[in-house]
Structures are given as structure tokens and as C-alpha cells.
Length: 270
Image (cartoon, rainbow, N blue to C red):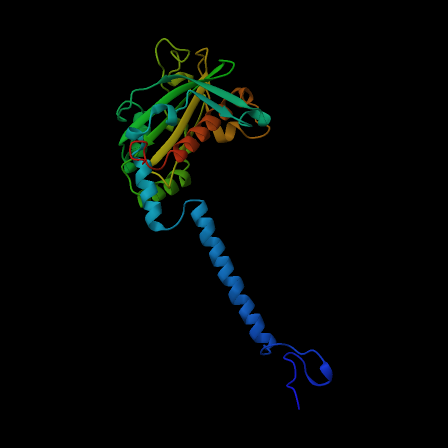
């Protein structure tokens, strides 16, 4: 009587590989395929996590951002208190308190004529503005959200031209402040503008800007764009006072609040 050899063993009971032997080159190719699939899957998962799941979603997000001005409460676009961790000179923290909100309006009288002309290519659907002061009540800063009528392609093109031509650094293209009567910013006029920033968004039909000055109403002979006033070693009075940080820091935080609000409105949520 004879018995078959146990599976997995050859002559003299030596272990042998189970199944079919795979050539090293085939094994390497298979590993590459698995790795490639893994990378693709990871990339797709990553795009979902950041909300970039395709051109359609991007267009929907762009359109949703353009309607925020009339469907989101002002306190969510311009919070009563804004905290800026590390936003001040040397990484110091900042806290800004809102002291005035301008009625939402068009752009006819909100910008100097030259800036209004420069912004004309993207149009003006609505302009929202609010003015803040710092914790020491030494500075005042107006931050604005200009909702344009442009599509995504037009915003990208405008951003390229605006930056390439250095329009965001020209003193004759500074945004105007919102000086509300009866507030600390009552004397915050055109002559008091000290530092500013203008940012053209490409994933939303919005131009974000901020302009800062001293709360005591002093005039400024040589205003500086925030980017220059924030440079290490800058010695001008505007730079030394941190007014560039005031403008840039507040503009950045309001822009972040804008992005967080892109999505279904509370009335549309189920």
C-alpha cells in the first residue's frame, strides 16, 4: 500500500514552496501595480479630505462663495472678536474687536477712482466692510470683502495681472477705510491710511483687503504696503508700530472665516 506525498513537501521530506513560483520580474511588476493603486487611492482620499473632489465640486464651491454676502450673518463674516495668534510683530498674539459694520452696498463711493478703475475687470456685486481696533485701542483697521461678478477663469487672470503689475503695492491704489461716526474710527480718513493689503482670491469671486492707521487720527505721509512694513529690519514708523501686521493679520483671519462659511446655508441644511 502506498500513500501520496503530503502537499508541500518533496523528496526526503524537504519543504518546498506551495503554489506556483513567480518570476522575480513579475513579482516586482505586481508590487509596482499595487503601489500605484495605493498612491492613487491615497490621492483620491486626500482630495476628498480637503474638499477637492473634482471640477464640478470646485465650480459649486466657487458659486457658493459668491452668494455668502446675502445668506450668511454678518457675525460669521466679520466676527465681533477676532483672535490672531502669532499675528503681531515677532509672533506676538493679537486680538481685534469690531467697532463698526458698514451697510452692504456697491462700490461707487467705497474706493478711490483709480482703484475702482483697476477693479473694474472683475465687477462689483456687493461690498461688505467692518472696522476693528486692537486690544490697546491704539490702531484701527478696516477690512473689506468685495464680491465680484467674475467667473473662476476671470479671477485667475485678474489675480495674475494684479500681482504681476504690482497693483497691490501702489500707494495710489490703497483701499479707503470705513470711518463710522461716534466710534474710535471716526477720524480714520484717507489721510490716516498707514498700511494696507489687497488679495485677489482665485477659488472664490472675492477680493479681500484691509487698511490700517492710528486711532488718534494722525496723518501719514508715507504709507507702506503690509508686505513691506512686515519685513524684518524695517525701520519706518509704520513698520515699527506694527500697522502692517494689523492689516495683514486681520485680512488673513477674515479670509479664513469666509472660507469656513462656504457650504450650505443654515436655512438649506436639513
